[in-house]
Image (cartoon, rainbow, N blue to C red):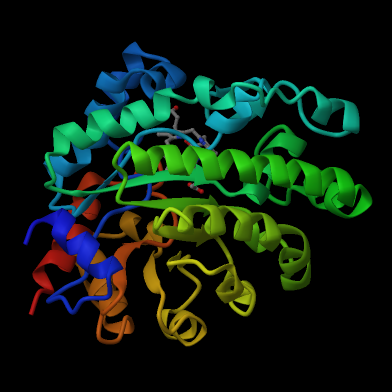
Length: 342
Ligand code: CP3
């Protein structure tokens, strides 16, 4: 069975001799091949050019026996296309030129013709799909509304996203409207990627874990539910990654997700108890990739054992691969999953 067949079988809940494996941020700065492309091209230029985005998305598939590819893009394409002006400073993460603080700021968000300005992303998906010829599963993705809201309000990467969390409660109407706009954009963008050939889509809620469960349930979950419902109406499969989301496990099942991508602190058994029929993905600590191939293999085997019978499971990291990660560790992890086949 090839990677795509294995990936689809896991999503369908079929019994497999091992789970499929792919890694969040598998195409990125830890790869010399990616850095070479970035030395010659700007980040947005790589996203916008289907030849380049396909090239960097394929690199990790050449190096490791992965079962799925993820389109090369970024969650911040949505605020970028709405006119917030996103740039990536050297090492400091994203910068937003026009952050969201007031009703006037929100009124400036340019949503007319948004999907035309984002057409490069489904185009990148179909280009990658053609190159794969069915060999690997293919994921599309988008930022979850709350995480995009965090960047839009804060204007840069922060540990606590205090301005965003304060605004959520001081201007709840403004926040709800913004989250609704971001949800509609995510739903449309994910559907466009499915139409272009994505086998499943993943929402990234990197900063979801900053919120307590009651705020998440009341203010964020409705926006997520709207996205899931719209994609389910078209029979699409939707996974959600939440960083630091262990305390949100009681809330997440109500979203109707097909699967949950666990961070490294959320154990598989706890997530399985919350989502008995869902696909669970994860969750090796990405920092472990800085140890040694022997430790990586041992911890990967322990992670696989924590999946129980491994049904409805996908092996992955608990967060994206960090810049500077040794390539040999990534290989050790993927090999350990492949070697676990019974
Ligand atoms: O293989 C892949 O997964 C690549 C596709 C991908 C990127 N970003 C490319 C990228 C994906 C799935 C993302 C998701 C993303 N982007 C998230 C959610 C997942 C997570 O890691 O939490 C978030 C929060 C972002 C926002 C973002 N984009 C940040 C914070 C940064 C700068 C810091 C960093 O990690 O590099 C980016 C830029 C970015 N997105 C890069 C890449 C390869 C590096 C840009 C460069 O080449 O200089």
